[in-house]
Amino acid sequence: MSPEVQDAWRAAAASSVSLEQLQAAASKRIAAATQTEAGLVTSGAFAGLTLGTAAILCGHDVGRMEQLPRTADFPQEFIVAREQRSGYDHAVRAAGATLVEVGFNELAGGTGVRRTEAWEFEAAIGPQTAGILYVQNADARPALEDVVEVARRHRIPVLVDAAAELPPRTNLHAIPGSGADLVVFSGGKALGGPQSTGILCGRRDLVMSAALQMLDMDDHPELWDPPADWIDRSRLVGIPRHGIGRGFKVAREEIAALLTALQRFTDGPYERRQIQEKTWLDQIAADLVAADVAVQWTEPATAEHSPTLEIAVNDLSSGQTAMQLCRALRDGSPPVYVGHSKLPQGILIINPVCLQADSISDLTRCLVDALAPTQ
Ligand SMILES: *Cc1c(COP(=O)(O)O)cnc(C)c1O
Image (tube, rainbow, N blue to C red; front, side, top):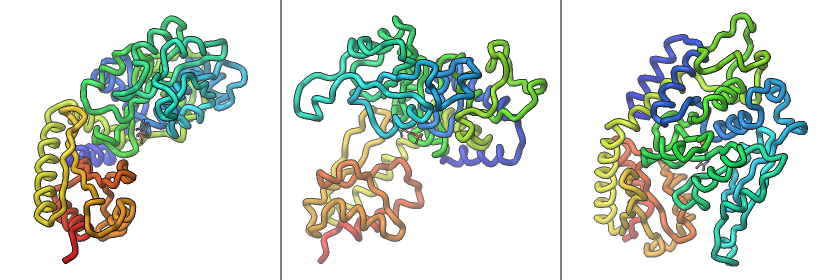
C-alpha cells in the first residue's frame, strides 16, 4: 500500500465511527467513481460475489435472508457459461445458489470453433432462475452487453465478476455501464488498497440487501438508524438478524484505506507509480543483461497496464526447469515470488506491481544468483 493509503489506515484506527454511517459515505464515493447508484466496501471480490448473490436471492425479504444458504422455497439458480467457471464461483454457491451451466468449452477441448452464445442463456431461463453470473475479461464471450440484453427482457439480474479488470480505469464505469445489476472489483489488485478489500456496486436496492446481510445487526430496532438514502427501512417488514455475510465484515481501517486507494487510482498518482515501475524494470533488465541473463519485454495489455519482463530459462546453462528455479527463488533470502503463469513454457515473469524502491537491489541479486551462468 502507498504511504497515503497507510496513513488513511492509521488515522481510521485512531478513531471511532458507526460502520453504517461510514459504509453509507463509502457508498457515495464508490457510486461516483463507478457511475452507479450505490456501493459497498467488501472483504474482497470473493465476498462481494457471495453478498451480491445473497442480495439477488433475497431482495428485501428478511425471511429469506434468515434462511440462507437454504434456498429450497425460492428461485436459486444462477446461469453461467461453462467456459467461465472457476474456483471463484464457489463464492456464488456459498450463498446457497446452484449453478446451471450453458454452452461448451470446445476451444479448450479442441473439438470446435464456437464460444458460448447469448441464446443459450435465454434457453436456460426458467422458473427457478434467480440470476446470471458473468465473469468479465477482455476475451469473455458472449459480450456482457448481449447477456444483459437477454437478462433485461426476462427481468433476471446479472452479477459480474470484474475482480481483475482494473486497469484500464474506464472499466470502473464501463462495466457497470453495460447495464449489469451488480459488479464486483478487487481492492487488493491494481487498485492498491488492502489485500482484504473489494467493491460491490450497482443497483441501490440490491446493494442495500447486500449491506443488510453483512452489517452487524445486533441493535434494537428502535435505535438502528442507517442513513435513509442508503438503507430504506420502509421497504423492510422488520430488521434482519446477522446475515450470511456477517463473517465478511470490513473494518473502518480497511474502508478508509480502500477509499484512499480508489481516489489515487482514479487521479494522477496511479500514472506516476506506473512510470516508476517502468524505471525499476529498466534497471533490473540492465543488470540481468549485464550478468548474461537475457530478458524480453512484454507489451502491456493496455496503455494503463505495466509492462513485465520475461526470462526464458530453457536458454540458461543451469539446466534447471522453470518450476525448479521458481521454487529456488521462493526458498531464497529474501524470498522472491516471480510470476508463475508461464512456467510450463519455461518462462519466469517479473511483474512490478508489488515492488518497492528499497527492494530492487535485493531482487536483482537474487535473480542473478539463481539465473546467471556459473563460471
Ligand atoms: C482475484 C479474483 C477474485 C477474488 O478477488 P479477491 O479480492 O482476492 O477476493 C475473484 N474473481 C476473479 C476473476 C479474480 O481474478
